[in-house]
Length: 80
Figure 1 (tube, rainbow, N blue to C red):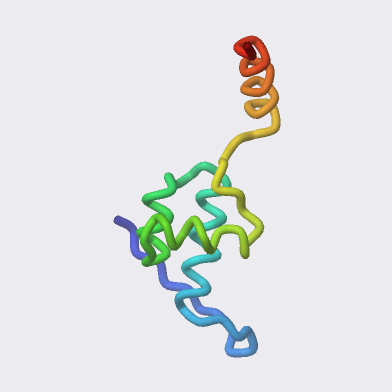
Figure 2: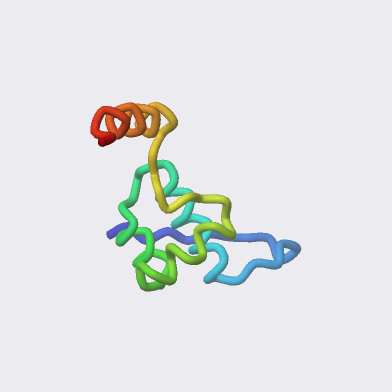
């Protein structure tokens, strides 16, 4: 595992947990980390991480618009 040291200006009021959550949520959103990996990075359980993602504007459903459109089209073919 890599170790990263960040120097954040004192003028920015952010604690370590907030910084980790911001990084983890962004990496999850970009598909660089799985949900479990991002939760571990943030120091949270998967459930807690999923609950906090919304406050960072990240959906737990990590679908692109094209993937979502394909899934909806496929679901329509199976409608009874």
